[in-house]
Every structure is written in structure tokens, then in C-alpha cells.
Image (cartoon, rainbow, N blue to C red; front, side, top):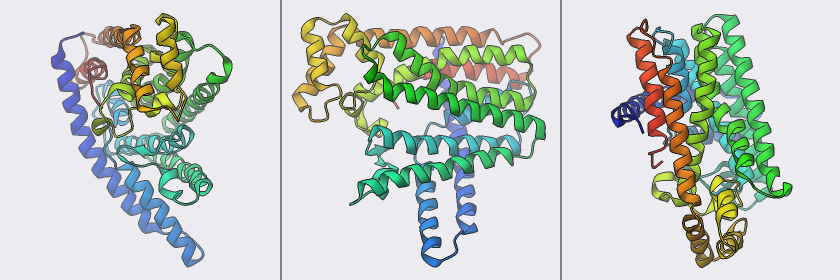
Length: 363
């Protein structure tokens, strides 16, 4: 990989941004809760409960990677982000919370960042009610996110263009999610199919969307925006491959979710696809006895994970993530022109460093 000092510095810079964005989000939620909505007392209480849950969910310990990409996408122009960009960053993180609420419901996850998921929080004693609430509360937070971006106060034409990019990105992410939940019904799981999911979901949503939004609001030219898109497709897939590794072989105390859920839910990952391709018959059998089997025993889960490692799939996934991260670094370096000022150089260094960090992280 690259010089790890840039990775360390990017991690530090991200942590600094996390502190500030969390403080701003808390202030935002407090003001939103104070507004009060409802035409009857019980309705007002329910709305407050919903918003208080949304606040708690949104303020759980998070990487805030998407917000950082808005910041550094803007900084790449050489201009320091002001109050308006921070509002856009808040909006992006609200959208992220909304999609997590929906995603957890579809994945039937019980925990998100060590706390109950939205459908679990509202669904105690009534599963259908909890699921219905996850859909609706997620929709509420999604709209609040859009509203925050639209009301940031920057040039109206640029804000409208950025919002269109945001909404089209969410649309494409939804297409990726549709493919993800449908893929088990389509037959053989392959590397090509898994990477198609990652490009449609993580590359566009986590990397490309926020970077391009920041860039558009700063007035970056089309050539630079295209380079950011190329960077996003490499970095986004690398990020997701590492996420999948952590989802199965990480530490629950660090990731905040079960390290067995991806396997038991039959999640379509490169770890699974390559085991089915590279593994011997015994290894494939061991994997399939646990993959997508919510009744799998502890012993079956252990054997499945062993098969993933012994087949070479684990090493392949890790190496693939590192390779893509290296390619992302090279693309970011191509932005490092001689005429860049201090702010723009800082943005390039962050893009290079974060590409290194995302494949070495443990959360």
C-alpha cells in the first residue's frame, strides 16, 4: 500500500470532522424536536418519540465518511467550506440514517452500532408494527435530509443540481439494493454479480454522491468530477469488501453488529462467491449448510467460516480490496497538480489517505 502516514493523517482528520458534525447534528435534532407537530396530544407525543429515536440513532458512534467526502470534495476547489457546506454534510448524514433504518429492516438485523435497530425498537411485542415504523421513520429522516441540503443557503442553481445528483444517487442505490435482495433467486453467485451490487450501492452512495455534491457546490470542472467518479468506483468497492470481511470476521464490540448475521442471512458477498468458486466439495458443503440458514448451529457457523478461509476466498477478498485501494490512490494522485493551493492539496492527501485507511480499519 501507500505510505501509511497519509492513512493515519486521514483517519485523524476524519475523527476531527466527526466531533464537529456530531455536535452540529445534536443541535439540529434539538431544534427539530422543539418545533412540535400534531393536532392531538397523543399524536404530538408519538411524533416526539419518533424524532427522539431518530436523534439517538443518528448520533450513535459513526464514521461520517460521507459527510467528510462532501467537505473534501468542496475543499478540492481550493476554497474553505463554510456554514452552508456543513449543513449539506448534516443532510447527507440524515439520509444515511434513513437508509440504514430501511436496510436493517430488510436484513432483519437486530443491532445497529450496538443498539436496537428501528424495527426492533418499535416492534417489541408487535413485529409488523415495528417494521411499519422502520419504513415510516426512515422516510421522515430521509425527507429531513433532503430539506437540510436544499436549505443550505448556497447558489440556488448549484444546490438544485447537487440535490438532483443526491436523489439520482439514492435511486441507483435502491436499484442496487433491489438487485441485492433478488440475487439469491437468480441462481449462481459470482464475483461479477457481487461487484455489480457494490458499485451500484457503495461506490455511488458512499463515495461518488457526496464527493460530486461537494464538487458541484464548489464549481469544480467536469474533468475533475469525472476523476472523482473513477476514484469512487475503486474506493467504494474496496470499502465494501473490507466491510464484508469485518461483517464476518471482525469483532462485534468494534463493529457494533453480530459477526454471524451476514452469513446466516445469506448476504451476497465476495467471500461467499469465491468460496463457491475456489472451494472443494467439502468446503462448499460446509459453507452452504450455514449460508442463509438462520437455524445454523455454532459448529456449522464455525465450519463455514473455516471453509471461507481455507478455500482461499478470504485472502482473495482482502487482496482485492487492497488492490482497488491502491488504484484509488493512484487516481487521487492524478489530481495533484502543481498549481493547487494548500486547501486543495489537503483534499488530495485526504482522498489518498482515506483509501488506505478503509482497507486497514477494524470498524
